[in-house]
Amino acid sequence: MLYRRRAEIPEDYSEAFRWFHAAAEQHHPAAADNLGNMYLNGKGVAQDYLPAARWYAIGAAEDYAPAQNNLAQL
Image (cartoon, rainbow, N blue to C red; front, side, top):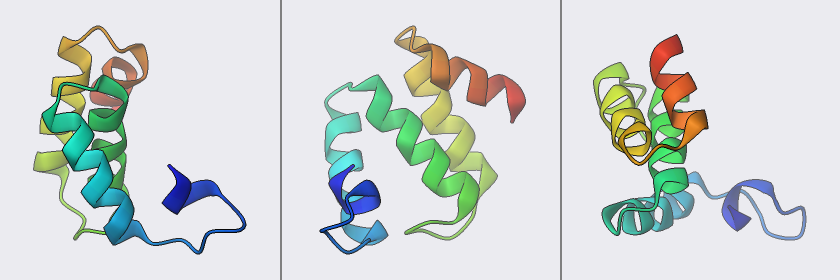
């Protein structure tokens, strides 16, 4: 999140993607949801709805409400 939201740290979506991916691989549902958002919006990766849905589904399976909502909207 620091690479996306902190004013004193320049945005680096590639670095944010790397950290979110590492956390999501360890079953962190918010990280999976963030990966879905990055794929949906083409931030740090090419825009692609299929992996967005996959990562949202992973977060949703962990009962993470934002991922469930994002998956439903997608």
